[in-house]
Length: 249
Picture 1 (cartoon, rainbow, N blue to C red):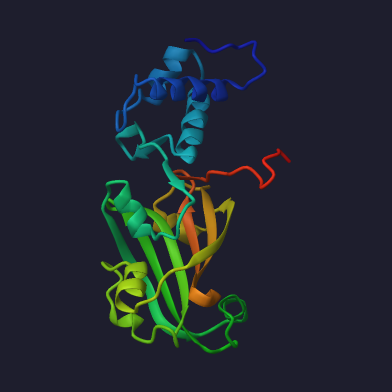
Picture 2 (picture 1 turned 180 degrees about the horizontal axis):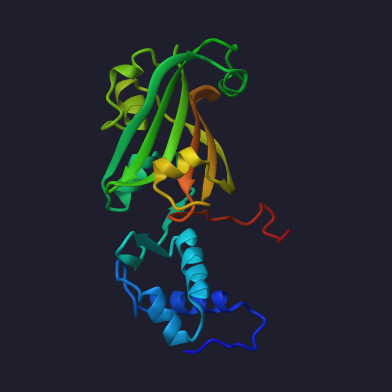
C-alpha cells in the first residue's frame, strides 16, 4: 500500500491510517514492535517528521505505545465499558478477566464543600469521607477516582483497606446498603500534569471525566464520585431502547 501524494489528506494522516489497517488486519499484533522511524520513512518515502507525527497521533489515540530506547509497539485494544447496572471498577475489571488493584491516594474525613454537600443533600461543612484512589488493571493505571460519602451513613468506612477491598462490596456486604440507582455524566477533556503522571500517559493526553451520584433506597445519596479515565484505553457505550410510542424522534 502506498501513500497518495495527490490526496488532500496530509501524508502523516494517510500513514496513520495505513498502519492502523495493518494492526486491525493482524499484520502487527498486540505488543509487536513496529518498524523504526527510519525504516518507515524509507519504506513510504516520507520524512521522519511525517512518521513521527503519525506515531505520536497513534500513541495519543492509544493504538500504540512507546518504550524509550526500544521503539514503538502495538497497544492493547481499548476497553469497551458498557453503561449498564450500578457496578464498581473492581467488578468491571474482574468481569473482563483482569486483576483489579488500587493505590490509595487519600483517605480521611473532611468537611463537605458546598458542591459536595449539595450533591449528597447534606449541610455544607458536615463531615464526609474522602476516598481517592488510583485504579489499576493487571498493574496498568487506568483511572483516578475521588469519592465522597456521608460520614453519618458509613462512620466505620475508613477501617477498611481500600488498596485491596472494593468500596461497593464494603457498602453492600459490610454496611448492608443496597445500591439502588446512579446518575452519571461523561465528558471529554485534557489530563492535567498530575493526572498524566499518575496514569503514565504521554502529553498532551485526552481523558474521559465521569461524575456519578449513587443512591441507596428512598433516593438517599450514598456516594458522589469524580473519575478520570484514560482516553487512550477506554470507550463507553450504551444500548438505547425505542421511545414509548415506538416511533423515531
